[in-house]
Length: 331
Ligand SMILES: [Mn+2]
Image 1 (cartoon, rainbow, N blue to C red):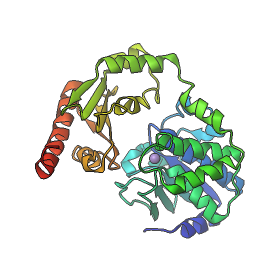
Image 2: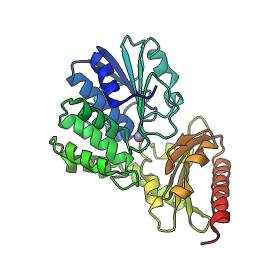
Image 3: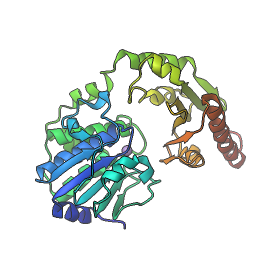
């Protein structure tokens, strides 16, 4: 059922014990929004557990309260489950759902347009660039007090999901909220340095390898890079190490669509895609492969091997580009 922020506030305030979860392979928004929410609930006197199937990536461990995040274990006796930043139940490992099985009430708070609407109270705002922004809006709406630690988590969530306040989904509210966060006493310079200028060397070496393999299609409008599992192993890449790669290749002037292919240990190929223009949306292309996300940022998983998946996906991009060109005529 679609729920207002007031309804979320009422259910959260009525709860005693709350489990907060976010999607597997967590990014800055998944960790920042979950930990920010966890700290908020704690300050309200709730018994809180924050659970993610994967550990906090090393790159986000600087966030205050990130040590709250635990792996799923046992069965939760909480009376409320809050699911953050997760478009569908399948974004979260079944062991987390197993843990949450007995929880009678589920809040689904998210910003993915592809959200399936699972849960009892559903608040999906596809116009919001980050779930962290929705957590802030909920707290502000409810009149809950935020501190600098909460602010750092929400800033990390919003900054990473907006590409440092650069993507088109960044709204006036986003800047307004960032101002509110800075006013909490957050050291904005430190957070940005930890997010963007604190990479282990292997992360930049991975970028070097990926750029050597850069491929252009459709007159340079599409660029892609691919990471074989052998290279991940050779460089000992950790979760989060390849975040931001796609921002480097999408920075090329001719590029509209940027794609990153990553071979996973199970042989599947993880595809992350970004577009600079609504007309060349990648959401529908990813949906065609059973994936999802937003119009300008979406992902999917394809069967391997890597080069076959790359061909199949780029072919689908080509069909989408060609159909646009038939409508608009050559530029
Ligand atoms: Mn997000």
